[in-house]
Length: 357
Image (tube, rainbow, N blue to C red; front, side, top):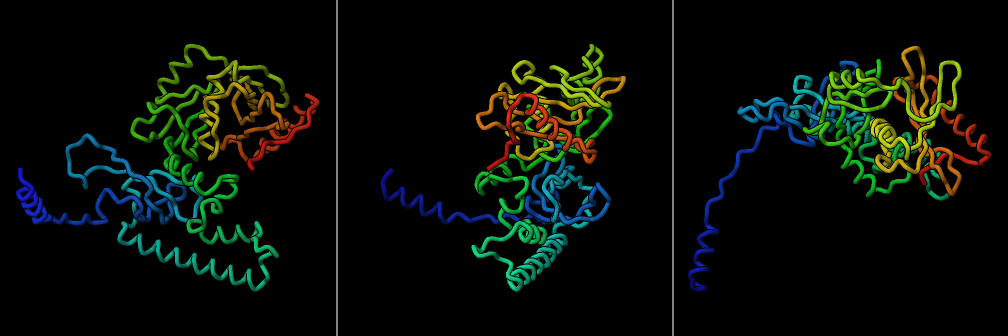
């Protein structure tokens, strides 16, 4: 082919008409990621403004039009911590994006006005110190006025202590969608708070409504029938390891991560559902886990736990701590912390909890 013919062919190609695609109606399913909705909040049936983070088709195999498929949306509720993010069904949508979008903008404008008023009040009262650094009290007020526009590292300060902006954004991208909605542990059913890296086969479509845990071994299953069959074979009704404390209906077990690896890994999977920043899942060998249980005639029921390094150069006596949501506000957290100090005294060591710096 000659150079002249090649140029002519390219010129003709450029003249090909461009077919414009018809824009999709924003109120048709599936709603766009980033759009706003007003939905019925399952917690108290109130109507809440939320932003779509992810979407999932419930019947991808059905040969029907895209708008006729059943969709679920993973949403973030405006003014709430991201642990309240949840999947909502199409039936829960009260206002579509065309109406919810303006409502969200109006709400944000009100929050912006509140932030400006707060800033003026702080400046009038000499709210900044000599170095121009905001106090923790004032920063909390500004965050309450509108955490979405504040830098991520400030908006989630208490939970994300020690993470820079880039690390925080990367973390939130990886864990933005909660993969397990609820868990069943013994007689309790608990809504989860955060993403946990369970093996993919337990949530093949990116999300499952419930996992079933054996409260004694912490093995988990996709179906209750699997759990029943597993427990019918006989399971020791207590955690592995050594019972080192028992009093007034409470018992504490010391579990070696190297000797009981599967149990400790399962404990970490469980804990990550309620702890935003927890990176220990697989390498449990260097740690000891102390599992607090309530006991009765049926066995030992886990309440919470703390972990610590077997050998700590800086003397940390506590690395991670969790009280399960169904046992919170009963003083167990204070008990676990006090127990970690008493253990250090028993070992004749001077230690303190590990803090993120």
